[in-house]
Amino acid sequence: MMNKLLRAVVLFVFSLFPCLSHADPELLIDRLKNNSEPPPTEQSESLKAENKRLQLQLKKVEQQLSEESRLHEAQVSMLSSHIAALQKKAIAGTSVGTVADKSKSEQPLVKQTERDKELSQLLVKLADSDQRSGGKNSRESERNKQQSEQFVARAAQVKGAVKAASGVIYQVVKKGTAPEVTQNDVIRFRFDEKLSSGKVLSAGEIRRKRAAELPAVIGLGVPGLGVGGQVKITVPWQLAYGEQGISGIIPPGVASEITLEILSLNK
Image 1 (tube, rainbow, N blue to C red):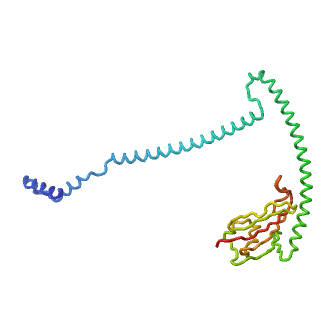
Image 2 (tube, rainbow, N blue to C red):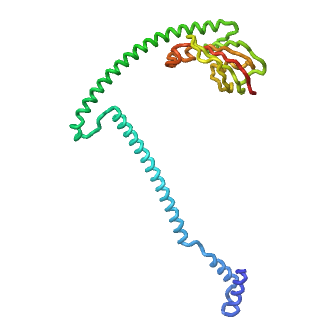
Image 3 (tube, one colour):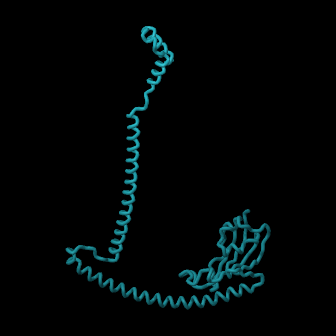
């Protein structure tokens, strides 16, 4: 519509002014069309440049804030460590007073020195006690190790017992009924455990677990069993509870005998 109107105006002007007869009206129309679409100005280019400059500046500010944040975290960490050290000194009774308070704190410091001396004596007695206890535990551990090795050797002599490369003894007492347990099965089983020292750790405990999630020593005795199946697993002291045992619960250097019976399984 605009092009038609423009053409009509140009032709009308040419009709009013005969002196323009040498000019080409179509060329004039094209020029007018081109002038109606303003070319990119220097102002738009400067706006683009300014926008780019602001983006770079914003990026620098973000980097600076990130760096300041990291420095702040480091300072907080150092202050936390310093506070923790001061708290330890306070608990130990160390004086952190100023020189001006020295005269006031002389008597408490003397008492603190006496307490430190008593504490040192107590620590010496405790160390002697631990040494004697350590010697006793060492003798007990050696005695239990010998007993454990005999315990495992007897288990290996039972008919049907199989000794694995690890030294663990597996004896299938009952195979049970089909289907056999696979690694993906969730089994419900009875668990009994006693030590070579004669102590019973578990009797008739009912557990439920996926076969693949059983400890390796136990899991190796389960495949091939069916419902009602039973396996006896004898574990040397090295793979059971080690040379130290568990203080107050399991003696040092004892072997373990585990009896596992499959009660049910879910395929």
